[in-house]
Length: 296
Length: 236
Image (tube, rainbow over all chains, first blue to last red):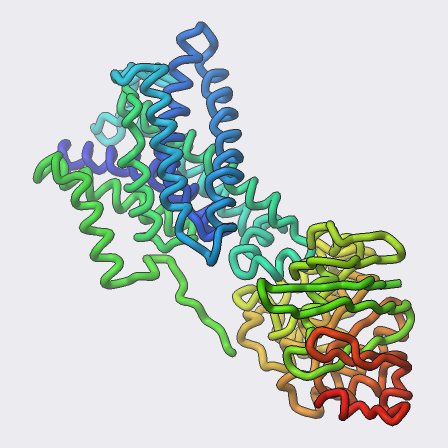
């Protein structure tokens, strides 16, 4: 196997795992409310920018990450309360949340540009530096890539276990199937919805920090196209499926890196959307999506 | 004791209930009768908290719950089997039961509660791993009843438990409801279009027509007719 191919593959898997995290966050709010927070990209950016800012004030980098995640989690609650809920409560199940979540994201982006400046800033090393690597079968593998991959996969697995094995996971599933029945059965649907937005924002924040770690810099525009790639991953894998999010994320990551390496980096993102169109035409329920089954 | 005071439910311009008052005491079944669209389901939905109440009050044992959200009411012991055989259709039979138990009163361990359900309806044990949406209508109704009773409710609301079922199954379902009501001594309310069926097992009944109470009294009395007003007439 030649080195160039291998390094592209590894880079693809690492960023793919992060796309999977974003997709997982999108899935989460989709389960509880059938909405997606398109402001996720800005939350990724904000979390990374805040981490840079807080650590530049002299705080330990891990504390900076935790603090930023807390801010982003609070914003998740705000987004649910002030952008999603009003849109859902307005007449007749409107799609207003698409615009309101996106709009709030753009607002955050603008605020970040105003207060942190619109230049890219260097992102500090969280665990390893860009120079750390291990050698496997004569290939250099960046430890940063491995950490990103490990964190993403661990979070996805923990998530899948939570949904499948715990009663709260079951409750989330129940809300996605029939919110009214869930309410009547005593499931605290409102709290689950708030929790889903909070957790979804935290996942976005983690994804932001991980991507910034790979890329080395962040700027206010960062994250905007990443959330679209996460969306492609979610649809490709099957909206609402955690394993689908992982598979979709890896697929998008690897294919876009390979195309970027062998064809042109300009085609990197374009190919992801070509994949989306192909998936919607051939298998609209996604790789792991289940078509609805029921007997009347 | 479940009490409604002057309760009105409106869906926009549609007036589903207008000034309905009634009381249902524990230890007996109350039948709510009426044609399609008379307001039976709206009444139940108002009690469990998913109907837009515009005026009046719902009281459980004297406590006004009109402003409480549905999960809080469920915690106070309201269990509502909604019309249209509502179940989590993609979840298995056992998952449906486990969820209902988890957010219910949990007086016994899950295993004991499940064993009780399976002893009563063995077919549910056979189908424990089947998606609820794939059960027959009768089996779904058995599962729904089990999901409401596994929660150890104090106020049981059953919306058209006989709808679309074969007579033999209806008999079995009603047998279960009557036994459960007698054994548990809780408030049980059944909405039915098949008046005779529900009145036979009920202590009291009332007839709704276009959102208003047109007839109320003891079950026997309603069945025989009273003051020249027959049950049939109130449906017309």
